Image 1: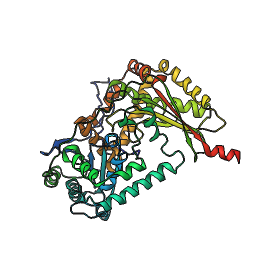
Image 2: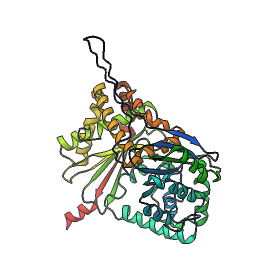
Image 3: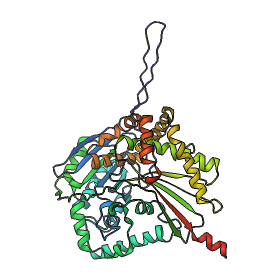
Image 4: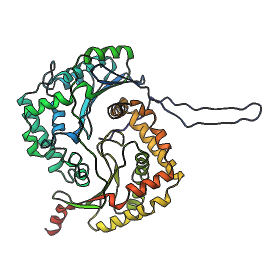
Length: 463
């Protein structure tokens, strides 16, 4: 899910210095922004982030649990996503789907999602309904209505979702679901996280109860409140509703590391519903928060983001092989809201008249000349693009992108203030660091290529 935003809340400042007499010297500093962040923890371990924004009479409540499909139980693929559905089936004081009705009847919207390293739930409501939403989220954190009827119902819903979105869809799962299974070697990063139908059927009440008691505890969660609210009043509500929820013993995280990829991998996926070939290329990412990680963020901007990106210029404008190149770091979010190993990836469809070899040859032209073309001017342009995207991501949908980053940085780094230092981290990256990153992470031996073979096109051709 890509989030797009408008950035109303920034505290922008510019400094104008004027000298004495007739000599006037102007010095304009780059506009800076600072997101207000107040961070603390309840006695039960719940991480709380408050970020005030008076620009709209709305408030967001976002609860992020430190459990995604990456570390769901083996032989229970898709279980983290199945459990996300269970969270709407009733709690101690709200019956089946009453949570949804409560939000909507109070003029709000809500949603939830399962990602690599977290499962999240959020509500956007008129600010005077903030207390109600805090109570409702605490109510289902405190206890779910776990019944066989609810489980069986949601197993059917999720299985149907898999069939509609993946199994019966042209390019279903390509490449967001497929590529991690091909490019990674560690099961935790390489399994079908949407869920094998047999595994979804095998889930039982004991699994659901154990999962809830283990991972849906306050000491495994972050609560972000963003928007128009009074800080002291909101703190009192959070303590009142969440403060006495018992913590749990969180098991140690399994080893989710990936070995260094030493040779190029190539795979073909037959797709009976596709009418054009498609190709995706993925590279293992550098370690999160390292200089190379931020360099890859800039290389993503240089290579695939926007019409002026190098791959778009080559494949779309110059060669005419495709109408669009899409890609990025973390297809299920952004480069900041994940914790474990990740892929940088891009994909495109192309006509049958164009060969796979022509596509790869054009890509190699770009990649071969990349290192020599990197200079400070190119980096500065990439920083402008990523800065613009960051402003969009943080500022819109009434602050939902801000809540996402604050919660992610609280969960993964115990430091939501990181939101205010991201731009500075990119500015530290030099051409030397970028070239080093190209050498280590954009080498062919760190590359996985997945091609879609369009069987529908073949069938149409033979008829």
